[in-house]
Image (cartoon, rainbow, N blue to C red):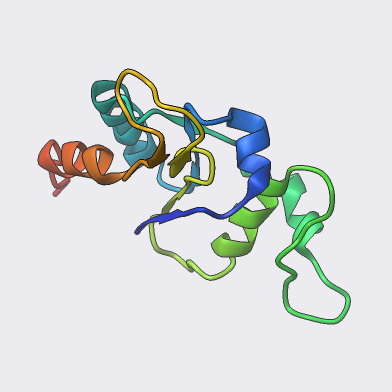
Length: 131
């Protein structure tokens, strides 16, 4: 499973508009996405999902809470999503900073960027199923 979402402003604070945050449990897919990102210039940067972040989404009144507090906002949002992925291999791309550009760059105009299209086409075109 690969999901893309404009999930958190915290990811924009961490990475700006030049990389999407990447988190998940599928290290092989994340490595291939990083290579695809370099090839397509839709770069991704992996953020950790350490066990210690689990406590930030624990709740006294619910199964899980979707806001972990002030710190590590992009990571705690991914930790929330992780609660619903079960045993599936999964990668989350937080595209909040890359989905809409504040200014034109040499390779992309101002406004909606379509981020993820080139990245996923490259990733899937070079995907080899492990048997």
